[in-house]
Amino acid sequence: MWRIILCIGMVACFKCSHKNPKTEIFFCQKCGIILPALIEDPYLIFSLKREYVINPNDVTKAYNQLQTKLHPDNFLGTDKVVELLATQQIMRIKHAYKVLLSPRLRSEFLLKQQGIIVNHDGNDTVKPAIELLTEIFAIKEQITEAEDQQEFRVYLQDKLAEIEQSLEQNFRLSDYKAAAQDTIRYSYFEKTLEDLL
Image (cartoon, rainbow, N blue to C red; front, side, top):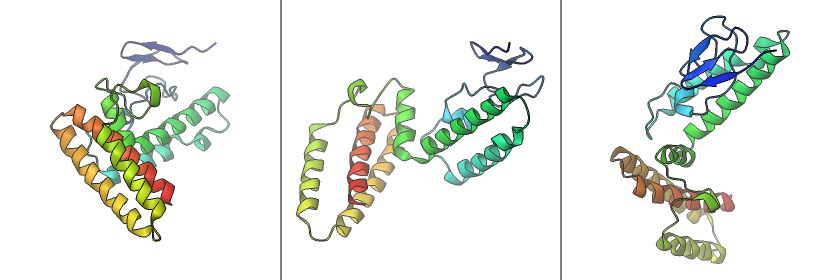
């Protein structure tokens, strides 16, 4: 029977029991078999420095390389456990890709690393500022009364770009409280824009 063992900083191979460092997240260093998808950190998955600002082209390039290397079709006809692990790895890679390319999800992840949880309803450690709620309420009211909603789409897209610049600055300065408010703000504006589309 195969076992998966997660030690502090190590992942034991289910086939040969070799203890792989946590940074070896795809294949066993000893036997080359695919490892279980245990690491959820998108920055570790894509070998990126944990910063807010990323290069989307680099992420997409790495994503495509990992998709090619770990696609479940590459493991057809092998052990069923290996096929299942390849599927799990691909699902994890897709999720990590989505997190890194979304300014809001990327920010939420980085804040969580600082012990700050936002946009998760009852578990939030930081609540939205009352000024934000008032601003969003006023915008939604204007949208419902407007005949042409296109101008609001442009306005909301501009606001999202403005908030993203603020997020970049706040993460660069390690101002996590301000980044948390920006992330909440981004979420509200993003949802308002989605409701228009």
